Image 1 (tube, one colour):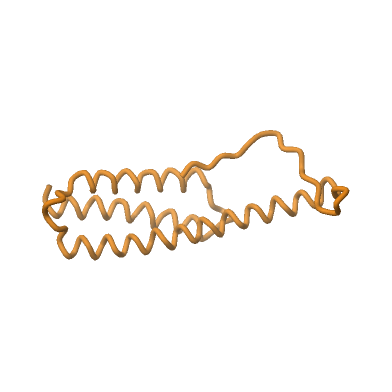
Image 2 (image 1 turned 180 degrees about the horizontal axis):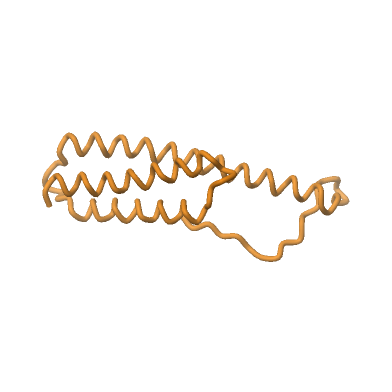
Length: 121
């Protein structure tokens, strides 16, 4: 596969990571399902890229630079995702404090949960 196609795959993954970061930067408006979909798409492009690259030939310098930039963006997106998780937990703690009183040990009582939330990643 030529370098142009490899760059396209990397750029496609980078676009999905950037879109996820933009969503996570606005946590009140963020839809977690969209973030999961975008990150899965980015993962697919990166796996496709790795499959297309030959291990016996070094990656072109421009492609390595783009990959390094993407790695930094993935780390920043991970930090935003961690902050979103912490914010969600804090809101859940606030809800439990106001809703069901306190436990005999003095801590906030847990709210009765009707179901489960699962985030795949």
